[in-house]
Image (cartoon, rainbow, N blue to C red; front, side, top):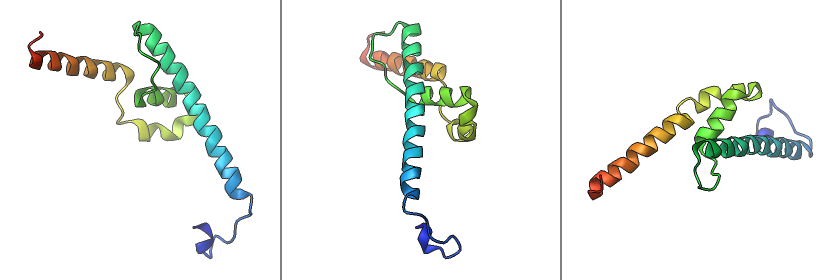
Amino acid sequence: MMQANKEIGKIADKTPLAIAKALELFIQDVINLSSTKARETTEKSANTNCYKITPSHIKEIIEENDKFEFLNETVKPIPSIEESKTKKKRVIKNIHKEEGKE
């Protein structure tokens, strides 16, 4: 793709490997921080479910860390962890209402 544009020129053989490694380390950092956030959130809520990383966890770590500031606009539409919990409770309540278990 980059070589198709004559204005860019050729790239060194090792450039794609360096980019791939940088992306791997970036994703690893995001996942590790999100995993920690998921554990903290689950412990606070006394939930016995497994630790599940949600988009809300990723949003929070992006908003909390300056190094991910460039992603703030991307995660803006994702609900916060608290908003997600409220929505989930409403969905469960509606399911019970439909089943007549209220």
